[in-house]
Length: 94
Figure (tube, rainbow, N blue to C red):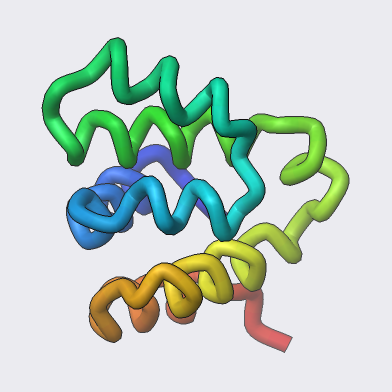
């Protein structure tokens, strides 16, 4: 489950690479630019992007698979392994 608290921790881990993560998640380019214009702090940008993404129609349609999508995006963007591990811990147990 991607709670707000979880997203805050993830945002902290991706703040320098949030645009790469957004691109990997296929966030609309105009939405990325709007976030950049509204927030100077990269952590706030990352949090806003993640929050908007998790409630997007694409993410809602994916259901619990969004955790896998996020993990893949973090890898694609070259994020720190500890952040990827954090997301792995959020994946549903089967």
